[in-house]
Length: 306
Image (tube, rainbow, N blue to C red; front, side):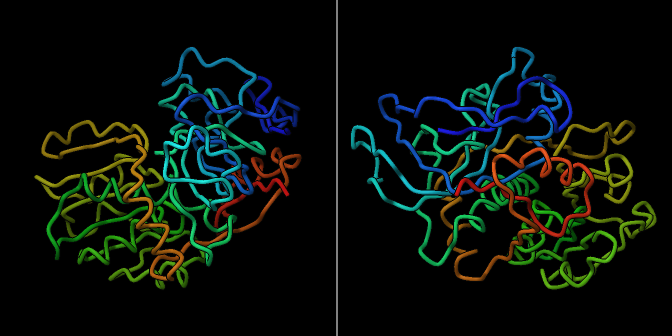
């Protein structure tokens, strides 16, 4: 099968298509034929080597990628709820498993606990945008644990995590202030926040909010918007020195099949919105990474294997 490998740490040019043996599932695993894989910032960090702060023993060549959609090719020993041919979407907890398998491939052997059924109404490309980003948003909101009616500031609401978080927080009954990228106000307004803020807004000048989900992350500048006794979740490690009055979380997304299934169903039913900017073949992964690093994309960049 074909995979897209990180051949050494570096720029997008280190991504190369290679041939590997078809995966064989270990006991308890299933093999998924992958149709689409999502490109996330964590993949850029893996390719560049920045991820070695968390994974010092990671050595190329390896296959990156957390999110995927496709269908079950081999149901293994039959101990899971899946059968060959079942359409699925899933998330490989890439850091937690030491990068031993990735989604930038035509197939992967995975733990069925990482998978959920993919509704017939949901195509693989759209489905691949969901797992890491929507689970991160949902788990971040659960960590914030604020009451309905509280004010939440979401940075990066034009992005996948921030966009899902905005929608989920509105559904939870929170008053959401959402920071949009330049020229992306209309999309963010459609996610339902109480107010859309420009990217260059002085967040420290806002009336203090109860909670922050810093999906960019902005860092200390965003923390300045949170009231004393408030709570903040950052999607990456940042320094918030001088804010001992603030509860801070920097979680790492974890698989949760029940929650992921509900999020996938919500997208399929149109209750949650997501978007795709462009698709690329595995052979064009380097170009996709260049665009991801440049930023400003209106939606996710997806690798397809067809």
